[in-house]
Length: 444
Image (cartoon, rainbow, N blue to C red; front, side):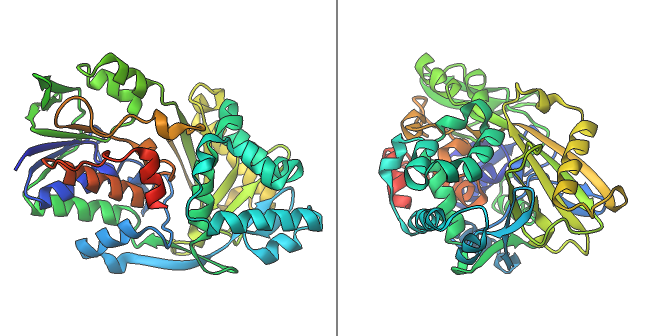
């Protein structure tokens, strides 16, 4: 059995550490932050333990459910009927056939065209031709200019900015399919959450690692992955050096080149070529609801956000309304450096446009959470751009959220990939034996 060091205590790193420890390896998980969880981490929101970045489960997230059952917390997954809204200056119900045909902003032909597009996206199990097409061209081809301009262009522009016209159609399709298949029927969407939030799963994984003899070290940043004679030997941190026969690195790819200086230069260039945008979640605790919907997509003059997530319409928050206003943008954009107060003012103004009844007196608490590497930019052909999980350095595996492609970031994909990397330790059949595009088709 091997000495395994896992870099990063997000959901993927903890899943890898748990699986490796359960398989009998000696495991150390090291995390730079003072708390575990990564994007699944929590903060104290006036006595409420809440995610900094919202999470939900879909009916297809089988790796999450299997792991929770294994950890003895399967009964903590709770399902709710949820709805979607669309705001174009007026709030509309959205996300089901009846809402589509009631929407006044499209003619009958456009509604039928958009409905067919959504139906095909949800029903198809494999669509490999989309790998080399942009989402813009794909949606224009299926839906036409008017639908793209009304529903999709604002979402892309206020999430991807200069990258908006060059996002992978395959990546967008799998997002539509995942949500579309999380339904009890065509008219009823069902999403899930973990009782107590994602911290429930994070804590269970940490306890599972410890129960199998592993260790989790918080506030312990990895400075360098050490190698000798072409194989990994350990990980250096400010506190100590952890000897290793295998290293599973789950930090964002922009950190890899500096952290693993012994990689061949062409491999460093591959990691450096993967672009990311940042994310800011402006979070409000309110005395009244903004909408009856879990999420609301926005396309309205004067509102420069793609939508809002009213998380309390999924998870019971004891009577308070919890609303996330997400800002996705390159970190070079001026808004990413705005002070919290300016972001809070703009975000609250957006909420008031959606529901003018919400006033200053309703604000009970606020929080601004930032992450520099929140979302990889997945352009057409992105599958071929991702380096293999197994590196040329023997014993070293590297993956971050971009390796979930064409799936989006999520707990289920974290669990799937983290567990696969742990099982590959000491095994000949490793996770990247198949090309990524072929694995994509298999998963579909």
